[in-house]
Image (cartoon, rainbow, N blue to C red; front, top):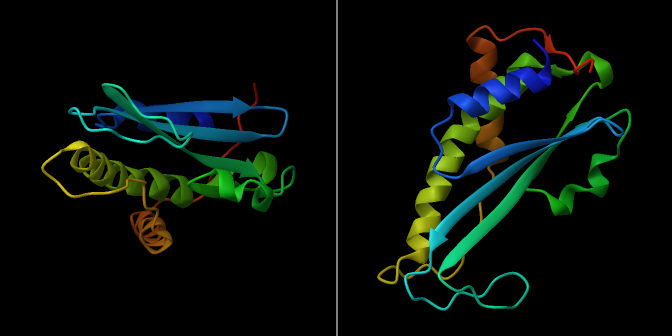
Length: 159
């Protein structure tokens, strides 16, 4: 199984109230995993990143970059993404890394959606919202995937 097929299958299996989409850039061999959450403002005045205010609906977007470290210097993009995750050219990415990533994402996105809805609740006193990536929790999920038998690589797609 290749990386793209694995990611598409896992996204289809996830029970996430928001949207997850994959953008594949074949020129630089990268995948952008877009996360979108939508909620109602509940008549709160909410300032967006551009300095404007949201009307009735608030959309929160973030993304992960999964990139070929042989083609791209991920550090150049790090500040634009929730997290950057390298892979090894056409060999792809370790199964444990990608399995651990999606196992961690299930928890992270569920918790983040709850935090997002708390942020939009006028009875809560949550001033800001953002998804909070934990490198420690991600690395633990990767280790758990290894212990569960994830071995080898998901190759880069051949399309």
